[in-house]
Image 1 (spheres, helix red, strand yellow):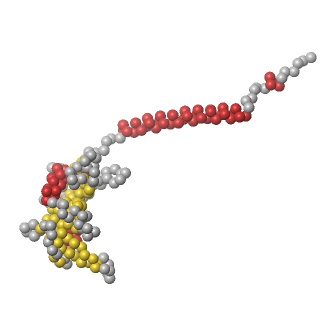
Image 2: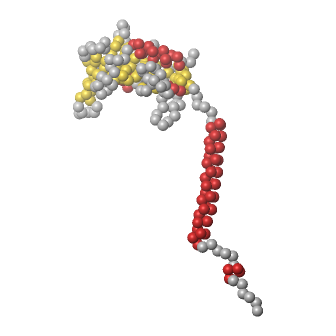
Image 3: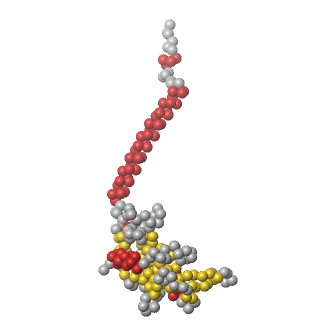
Length: 232
């Protein structure tokens, strides 16, 4: 008489369902961990290769003021928040970002308040809005009282037909020939926040500051800094 083998002997042993789920989950986790490590390794290696292939940025940027060419150090080239330095070369003027207190550029530890310096050629057909307004409105302005070494002038105008009359104040300094040497406009009628336009040699320097604080010494330093960038 043939003996019957147990059913368990005739078929492979099976794990309980809950143990099979755990084993499968552990297998997937191990596989996922290996994939993550491999991906990070490839990413890091790719970044290192990309950095080795990228050339460093230029140390100087070419700018133009009329026919003159300037090589502006990268620390002085304006850059917006989160963006790289501007690489557009202007045909008639240049802009620089610096601290007026020490004339240092971006990245200097002592330069905590960056301001913009605008340089334009001293030409009748090249000017910003303030200089254009002064030149075209000379017959319409009226003389005001002198103050702080400035002659003051007022221009009355209306922004639109039938609108209220507004007054723009100009503070100017003239040379011995009566030619404009410095023009200051305070758009908010607050003398702490004014736009200065100073003639230095054949260039107009434009920067913001208090009406009383700007002086010829600062203009001379700014002019010397800009001149040091000019390509001979």
